[in-house]
Length: 270
Image 1 (cartoon, helix red, strand yellow):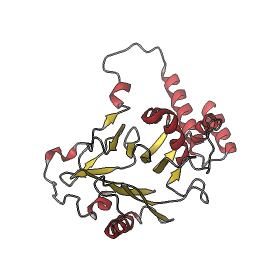
Image 2 (cartoon, rainbow, N blue to C red; image 1 turned 135 degrees about the vertical axis):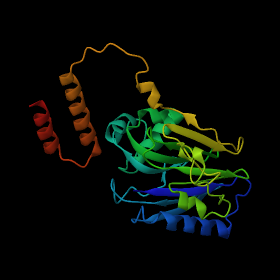
Image 3 (cartoon, rainbow, N blue to C red; image 1 turned 120 degrees about the horizontal axis):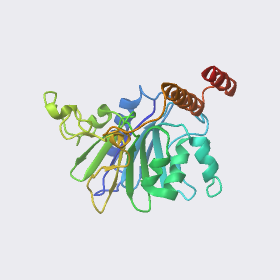
Image 4 (cartoon, helix red, strand yellow; image 1 turned 180 degrees about the horizontal axis):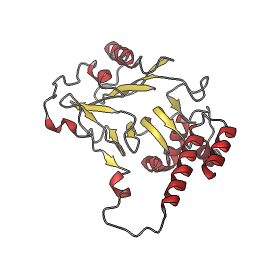
């Protein structure tokens, strides 16, 4: 697991000493998730801390990662399973500094903006800072596997991979709502005023709007049948489709050898 946390303050761009202390405390709260290093950075109005669990590109995949002209910066908690395939498509237009799957998101966002999320196969929480637009992009994977919390206080956005990383910031609300029946919704937390970004959603936060309006890019309901439909597939067809999806999922994880995958395919077909 990796983790990140930070805050955006458009009213003050000075490097206040207490802001660095806030980042330090946020990083401490993320340390159990991510023992392999910490980076604390300030990009004008954005203050960000990233804790890493090194898996892909152990030596070169330190985050935040910047694009070629250092106008975009990204941190990612998660894995992009189809990053090798996406890299092959992006290599003609972009120069890659690392072998990290996180850098794929950066260049894909340069090309497509938020629509880049439609091409990512994986589990992820993303924080991407656009230096030119002074705009923060936050997104969560389709099913919300990777956590992402946020709160908006006095036009200051505070966000992080864990609820605890937000609570160390002095402006984060501290009002428990354990008995709130609505607490079981996908977008709420155990603290009033602190929210979870729902799976399949993203939002942009900038100086012009200073508001949070999550946008849905993927909805599970769109993939479930609401009415009976005709399906000519047999039980054997369903079993085969499941096997194909399973083998594909394992192969994209990058942790299993090609010989093992080939063996599994033979077993699936037997």
